[in-house]
Length: 198
Ligand code: FES
Image (cartoon, rainbow, N blue to C red; front, side, top):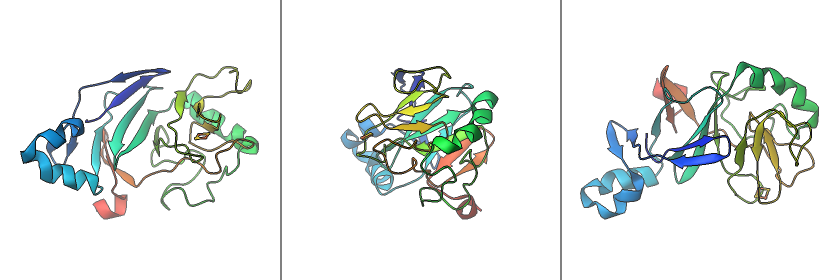
């Protein structure tokens, strides 16, 4: 697990973990200084997949992984959070994910392969800030009926816990869902479709 940022609610912790790509552990920040790792670094820059170990992500927690220079949020959603998603549809710009912001196998309100696991690119679709993870279901200053989701501090765009954007905010689209698949019950490979993985 490389380049991993654990975000417990609003606090972020940079961990010293390594992401495993094709069985080789790499800390990308160190790569420019270690010549023998250059081929892997190049491969990563070109979009090599990233394998995320999700076994330690607790219920309700988000962990970030770096993929193609982008943060990818992986969230372990609770049953309560999932149950609330359909009730948000009337407040959303694209509740059915009609706009092409996800692979064709990502459907439904949960926008995922396994409902509990959300995998989205953590880049606001307005001007590219990184939205904050605000998972607690409670009234917030930016939304008195907040049911958990992502809040972009740059210009106050809001997304639900499926990365679906709210109406009346600057961001025009839902958060992007990258290609990914489950290698097994505790590992996700980001950047490779299930079909491609065979
Ligand atoms: S960049 Fe997120 S609201 Fe503008």
